[in-house]
Image (cartoon, rainbow, N blue to C red):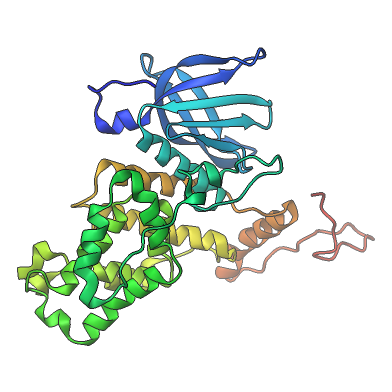
Length: 370
């Protein structure tokens, strides 16, 4: 275990030792450095990656690697993450100085893989513990039983979330992700605003202010899967609506920021050409909401850990390309190239120019290699 109590908290959580498994089965120390999220280019695509910069030589990289999409990563205890490079069959390991840093790194891996860092995947083919089982031992732990999300229990919920110790946060997250909890919690806003409670929001300890403190605390848990759920299409309006009721501005209620009004502006999202891929469009919207949450909504409260989590989520969204076949990619490229011409009123060129005497090729009839 490495350690240096004099380091700033943000650097300490990212400080790691890099290990490489040698041919004789021994873990060789490659050096100590700081891990950070990055993007690398490969085959004209930008891929999510990470690098470890040497502690004593900031210009030297101890390791630079893309994040592989296969389940190659394993969590060993609270501070170690290991994986096998499928291209070289080499084994690597990162030993973090702080368990919090290992948790943030693991959440980034799970985000790229499109799954919850707290999901239990079961056992692998070899009968050992799967990736999900390495995550804090969730397979044999019950989530924290939270009070029902009702107006009369908001103060109890605020105290419950605030009192959970750090080593039991995974239980709290499991409770928050329990079926129906977040939707029911966000619907409390509709109930309060529907009853005209917003007219009295200037009263301190008003239920709307308790709701604000609760959602703010949930976001500050720095759990990507929770944040992503709060910003989902069906929840983002209520999430931002709750965050409008900041108790620090209770005496200026008539001047509170209307985040929902800004988000619903028709001219806010513009495209030069249509985006027909639903998953790509969803990532664009989520990335914008993350930036808005980071730079505007939570700017007064965000700490280093939350800032790093939001940045990593944005980087992963921007870097990870949608999965598709080569034929689908070429078809989308053809439509994208032809769309600006149709917007300008110009006739689009033919998909295939046939030579004299050739029958030509009908669109969609050509078989592309996989």
